Structures are given as structure tokens and as C-alpha cells.
Image 1 (tube, rainbow, N blue to C red):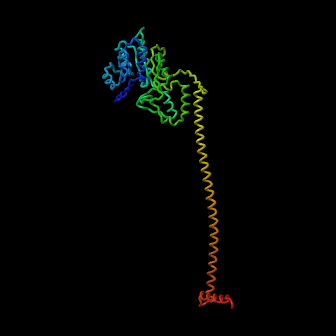
Image 2: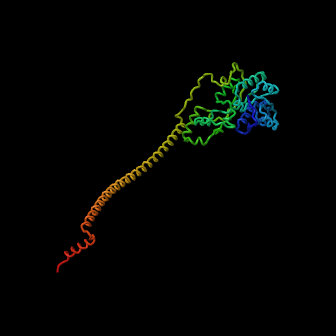
Image 3: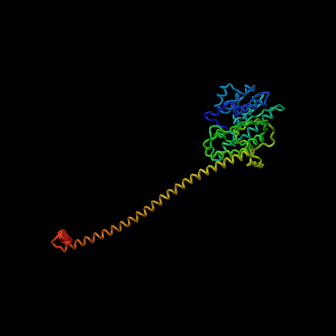
Length: 377
């Protein structure tokens, strides 16, 4: 059940290259007789004026009361109905005449049971138009397998936003295969598709990309492109015709399940010229990184060797200082022993001299020695 929020924020612009502009082009190409386009979940009705300019009549169906003043301000016809209330929706559709096309633009991903609405619309289209051409359906749905989301998942990230691929209000997520199965099993056959391609989606993260070497990123993108042709598709934009359904799906899982059929594995051409070029670039980048790392190690090794030489020299100096210190200790001990002996000798001499001082005795001895050594005439 769609729940109404206090403030309405689903304001979708109409501009060249948008999913809504693409939807209008598909309607213009496939409905030359014009007619009434019923825009289910119309929001602010951004496709209303462009369709009217092409000669179509336009009627919006919207549940949110916050969007109704926007539709009224544009002078667009509208009805208020919840797309999950099929009784109310059927009543609104029965009031309309000359319906040539139906639109579900950025709607299916907001529904818990989109299969219920699609089955109802297919039956309505086939039952109410007999042999005349039944209304065509145009849908736009975000692609959950966009390469930006894939890279973020590879890095462990899942970032919800107010709008975009991971709108916080999305309750269903679609791959190309899931969407194709859902529509086929709910009574809609593809007529033409014109997907909106964006190399950089709202989930593009330059900072995250900067963490990967450019060649590695290119290799991932090249291999992914071989396995997954919808990696740059931001929104699937398809126009379909209603077909009878013999056995409708009972639930969402049955609607999108592949029925147990195993899909063939992609055949990677790892020898293609583009892949080879990317691989060579990756190898060259890695070799350059290893060479730079090796040069850094060489510089560190030389610095370490110089530090070792300086350390060995310091050790040798320390050893020499220890030896010198040992010799000084031995000389100091010897000097102290000599001083002790001199002190003992001085004490003995003092005892022998009695009242004479050591200085007097030395003076007498000096005189006697001098007399003996004086030369004779």
C-alpha cells in the first residue's frame, strides 16, 4: 500500500535525455493516431505539456494529495487514486474515453506487488478495447545492476539516497532479466526499448574510483561489459503491448523467477585486443610500482648499511674507551699505593727525627751532599 508523506518531493523534471522525454518519444513513434495518455503515478505531471504539444490528450492519476496542486497549477486533468486500490483505479479508468496509452514512469519499484497492478492493466486493456488497438504501456524502471552500484557492492557499500537508483523509498529492485520476466508473465510484450544510458549515475563515486589503479578499473569494466551489456543503463525505458496470460504468477517471486532455467555463462574473450591492451597497461603499471618499491628498498638498504658502519665505529670507540678506562683505574690504584707507602715512610722518618722537623733534616742532608759534591781546588 502506498503511504502518503507529509511533504511531496517527487518532482521529476522533463528534459532532453531524461527517461520521461524518452517515454514521450516512444509514445509519439508508436501512436500516430494520437489519443488519451493516462499517466499512472503521475507525480507533478511533467510529461503532460509535452504530450499535449504533440497532439495527445493527457490525464494524470496520482494518489498523493501533495502532487494535486502541482497538476492543477499546470492546468492538467487528473484523478486521485491509489494504484494499489484496484477497485478505485478501475472506477477512474472507466470514466475515461479514447485511452491510447498508459504510463508507469518510476512507479513499479515503489510497489510491493507490482505484478498485481500489471496483470490488472493488461486485463483492462484487452477487455475494454475489443478488436481495436488496445492501449500501449510505457514504463521506466531504474537498473539495479548499473556499474556504479556494482563497484560499490564490490567495495562493500550500499548507499541509499533521496532520489536515484537507490531511492530510499524503493521496495523492489530490478535487473534486466527480472523486469523482462515480470512483464511477460503479467501480460505485456515488448515492442521497443530505448534505455537511458548514463556512464556516471547518481551513485558515481570519484573518491572510491580513486582507490583503484586505473588499469585495474578498466579491466573490470571491460570484462563486465562482455558479461553484462546493461552496465551503463541507468533506467530501462520500454513500450509494450498487452497480451493474454494463461497462468498468472501468484506472487512477486513467481513473476520475476526464471522458472529454474539456467542461463548460459558469459563467454569471456580475455584475448581480445581491448582486454589485452588493458592487461598490458595493468602489468606495466604494476611493474612500475614494483620498480619504485625496489628503488625505495635499495635506498633503505644503503641507509641501513651506513647506519651499521657508524654503529660499528661507535662500538669500537666504546671498546677503546673501556680499555683506556681500565688502564686509568690500574694507574690510579698504583698511584694510591705509592702515596700510601710515602705516607708510611714519612711517618717513620718523623719518629726517628724526634724534635727535629723533617725539613731541618732534609736541609742538613742537602748541605752535606752539596759539600761532598763541591769540586776541590
